[in-house]
Length: 418
Image 1 (cartoon, rainbow, N blue to C red):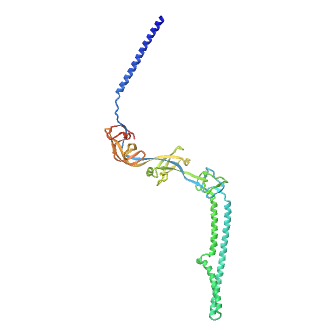
Image 2: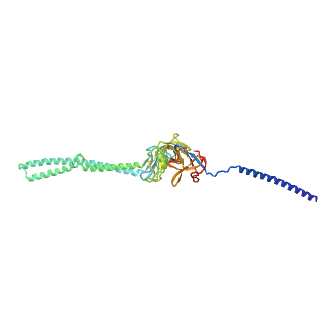
Image 3: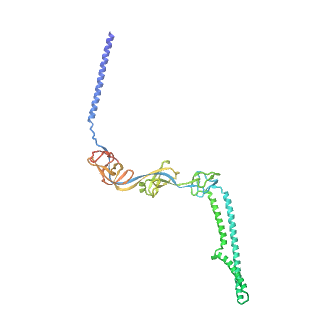
């Protein structure tokens, strides 16, 4: 019985403490809520005005930022191919060898051609001998015909005199005349062949035949020379595809020679960039593969658009003062700011919006309202648009949230740093 009473008393004391703890916790919660509600009530109510970024517009020099990117190229890079198909008898260079202009790179088999040259040269000598024989024969025939003609002429003239005095008959005179005319005709034929001091036609014919064969010899020698492939420039062998004993095809690429002493960067340009980029400008050029920046000078801007790519080309000379081994085909990049207009008004592109195809901006007034203003656009670059009319020097324009604005709208403005 005593135990039951002790348990009842313990339960009463436990319930009493639970009530006390619950009351304390409830008081703390109520106090926390009260304090926070008071803080919320003390916060000011925010007005429902559009929040916009703004920028003050003043007259400044307007620049166009041009980014240039391209690949390194050598001043000279020559692809070599044999003129004729033939067997390779000798290769004198390896990949990576340095060569000078005129150095022999490859020799094709010349055996058959050497035989043809010797045969044709012998024919040329025979033709020259025929020319000498023809010339000597003509000279002999000419002087004999001339002598016969003069003799028959004198004989005929004597016979004419004898006939005039009745010493000979008409028949004898006629025979003398015929012999005279025959010798005259033979002489005139030879004489006419060399009229004007030229050699006789028979001699010229032999001479031209000999000359033709001599030209054939020269053509064969030139063909033989073409079987010896030489370097047309100083440089390095950057490509080789020829081995001794193999047949190489005429016109097929067998060597490339690259002269890397002068390196350039070829870049593509848009028409807007090409219109204002000038030769002589200096541009820092970075080659990422080397981790270095070089001074580049613009030496060429193409005067016309590439009809296929619809782009322009610029070439920059890379000033390699450190004599670095810059290979061709490396990616290179740089940028330059070109003055477009001095002392002009221009706005960021995001400030300009279009209604019915016409450009406008929102101008921030002193009373925190905005005004829609039509403007006239001039020059453009990658970030700004020139404002020719519609804005005044020193006015502030809105850069964003234009779709939420109209003339008279009150805004909360935050100025954008340029």
